[in-house]
Image 1 (cartoon, rainbow, N blue to C red):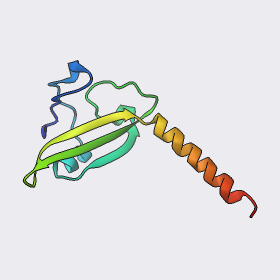
Image 2 (image 1 turned 90 degrees about the vertical axis):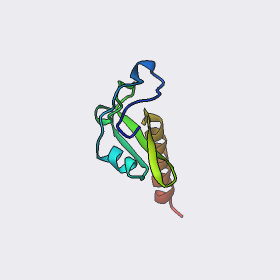
Image 3 (image 1 turned 90 degrees about the horizontal axis):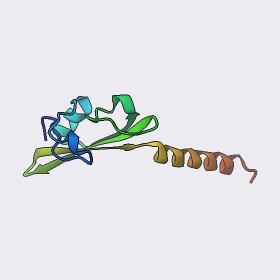
Length: 100
């Protein structure tokens, strides 16, 4: 919802609670989707999420008739994505440093 209240969650105890709103949530309420990799402690998930260190946080506005009616918040562990990025970086270094 637009007030930060959790309507549905994979953790049933989170439903009905209010997740802390921040600037990125406000941008989503304004209609702009938001995605970022953030420290787990700063993710504003509303309930604890098991993660190594960082989370991918996404706020997706749902609108009808040009008006935002709700914002879907998704939080997930960023470790698998960051691990793949690290491998891609390594591959780029190997390819660019190899003699022609």
